[in-house]
Amino acid sequence: HLDKNQLTSISPRLGRLQHLERLNVRANRLTSVPESLGELTELQDLRLGGNFLTSVPDSLWRLTKLKTLDISENSLSSISPRIGELTGLHMLDLGHNQLTSVPDSLGNLSALSGYLYLSNNRLTSVPAALGNLKNLAYLNITDNELTTIPESLGNMSKLKELRLYNNRLESLPESIGE
Image 1 (cartoon, rainbow, N blue to C red):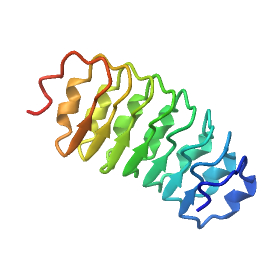
Image 2 (tube, helix red, strand yellow; image 1 turned 90 degrees about the horizontal axis):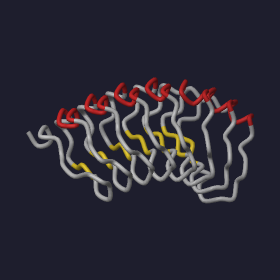
Image 3 (cartoon, rainbow, N blue to C red; image 1 turned 90 degrees about the vertical axis):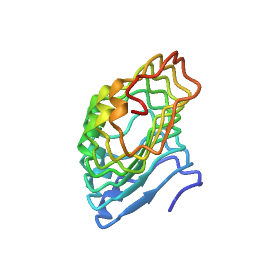
Image 4 (cartoon, rainbow, N blue to C red; image 1 turned 45 degrees about the vertical axis):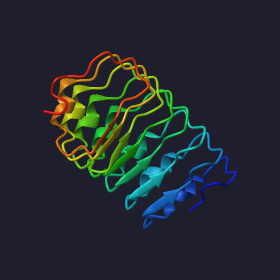
């Protein structure tokens, strides 16, 4: 755990720690993370939130053993469609960024069973593919600019909590609550 420090960079040599399962660098001053992050193939829990990241390295999408990914509270304006390759994720936090859209490939994350945070972004819509996340328990899309949500969200039969406040919604799809 290296969270809540003043780190401005991480050495590319971090990739040598090939048995590392958890990396927490939340709440530092990172503006980038090294491409060698993708060499941490045993990583299951990665927390990069609360930094100053405007992007994440493409190598991140090779970490297929990840169960938890937190890249919240950064300055990300987009997320690669390759995020859909992280099919083992149980929890994903993309909240508090500057995202104007999220890729359809989020619908490939069928193992998501804990939470998906998309709150406090600039989303005007979310993909219908989110309805594929049938095991998800908690979905938070508050504080965005949504005017509608897809009918497919009604397919999320295990959803225990759906947060949509502070958007521009005028109605909900009939499928919600069926």
